[in-house]
Image 1 (tube, one colour):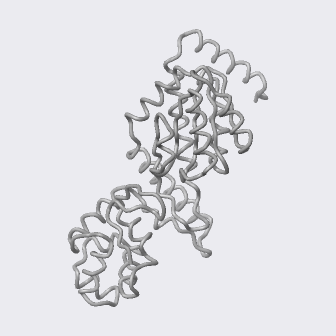
Image 2: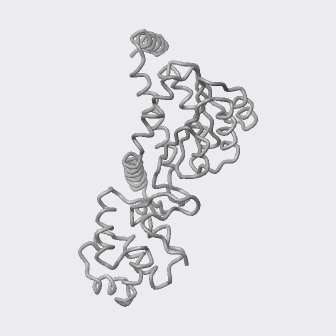
Image 3: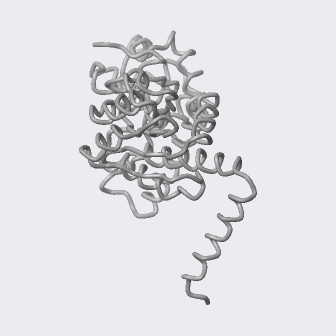
Length: 297
């Protein structure tokens, strides 16, 4: 069994995971049967363990004290006290993702609480792990762009279309490409002064990597939005790592997409704030024109 440390990743690319509850959840299927009893106890009520001793934890889980110590080592902790310290840090982040797993017995009220709490916690995680220096470089590139093209597939394609819709904030022509053939065609026609924003949560979509490589070869600047550190970054001038606490439960909402949409909001708003007064006046006129299409009360 491969044991994760505190910088272990989800299966696939390496990324930073400091939330010990996430480490437990990701390791659960690899643990020994007795160790899994300790894990289940912690995931069910992590707050209870903060004030428990090794003996009390062992009794509650129905295992021996050495098993508790072995469990701590299995998830990359240096003993029980180190584990409790990391557990306290994880709980300080807010509602852990492990508590967001939806059950068939959940009431509508419980579903509301779980999804909202999980989303808020994951967005806060993404905010604190976002490289602000890289974000600033991306804003500088977008500010100087003569045209911007957004590329994404699947859920990332939704983000690309939302970004394209914000073209009045960017102040230059924007496009959104989510068909693989169209993506390569557009990337092949890009030129210096253009900016390609490639969006892939996994960072492993071959066509998106090819789009980034092609656009850059043609002189365009490339900004990547991804959830993992992968080879996609090597084809980007700036790579923005938007790390979230997505888990694999089939009912869990895709917070990676929500986080990517927030980052797009940050980029578009920051660029708009740098535009001159003439642009601001045009933007205000556009908003007034849109208001004319709304029915009054």
